[in-house]
Length: 277
Image 1: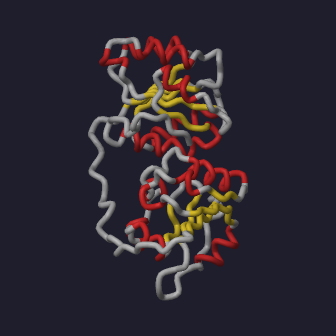
Image 2: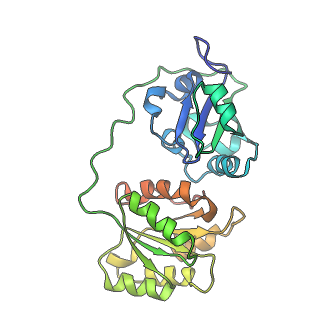
């Protein structure tokens, strides 16, 4: 399974609970064209275009947080560039297994997952590119501004803290009405995060009213926070004006991705459909 001098028989990647890559074997190097040296410090969605918010990402998070082993169908990753038409199996890893597989001690504070890729067809191998993923440009001197509408008093400080670590200025609204008033009276925000689980907050209504504001204030990118993976009403999200959503139990992993997508270049990277985390 793992490298033994040549190209491995199948692809193996190990990630931690933040989806940071800890192992990227030779099979993946030659199928993706991404050298393992370029994966250091990268999250898996950075290396797999189309993975962010996908079925694959959700199953990986489930394996990490719930210990669930899953096989992902090829059609569920058909949108992912080099990974299309591959069979994927996902399994959680305990620290002893990680140490045995990688020959080094794992952090006791992290959870890990192994994702295996295989194909029943001959693969076209590429020469791994060691120049990909050059260092990011220095961040803008003005921090992105995020408006957070969140009713859970336990989660709210954690979300705020993660956003601040990502370099954001955070303004908190406790009701949808307050969120609308803050947007009307403040300079433009770069992102609106809205809890839509609590009907008393009025997240949906607030979003629709915000979209009706003048263009300089009403075109703010917006991401909804939903309670669990069973959420299916994506059309309602689109109609309300949201661009994306993620599942609240996974916010520690999903929030950095949301910041990359919507704040990295101060614009949405969405291409028309709502993706889910």
